[in-house]
Length: 240
Image 1 (spheres, rainbow, N blue to C red):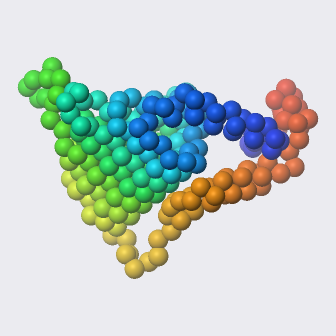
Image 2: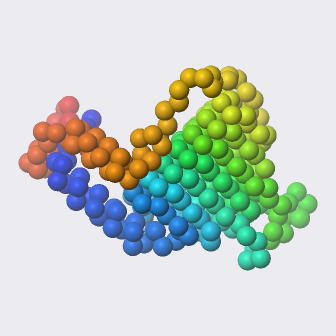
Image 3: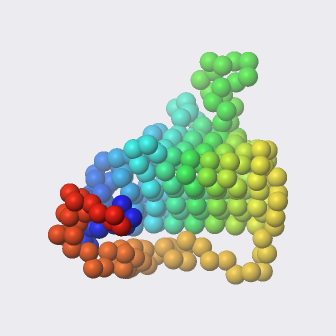
């Protein structure tokens, strides 16, 4: 399909179903989840372990072949946690893994298949140690982590940094830096004097995200009808 043929009422019904499913089956697995969460296909999101907290306007886009995972795995005597700020986006295949602590700021964006982990999960010599060494990961505000990028243990990423696609980050990244490669190196510095618009500006308040999403779907689905949707499903034509 070249476009979404659903009428607006059908989109609303589907969204209510997704939201209800997420509230009933998924939200209880978080230590805390703020209001206005929008989780696309929440049955393909896995939340495992204690102390996983998320702020306002969480946005997750999952699918059957691109499960999104938030995992805390640590012995019970460790205070491991994942803490996520407001207005963050997690695309399909993203994995956030913590044996100690992963802290993510506000308005961060994670492209498809990005991985953040604070642990190697096995020692070089003792590969059956149930509590391998981990070092906390801290990601600042408005950080953009590209497709397939990897952020390893002990890394601190400054505000507004950009991690390039497939980058392997094993050392700290300064604020406003653009890094790329394996191992990742600074390839550009953004101008801190240039005004920066972030997801927090658009989605930080519950009313803002509700208005924004409703307006976007009304525009995208304008003119669609139930009959047109049925025709496109059963009698597709070139151009549909």
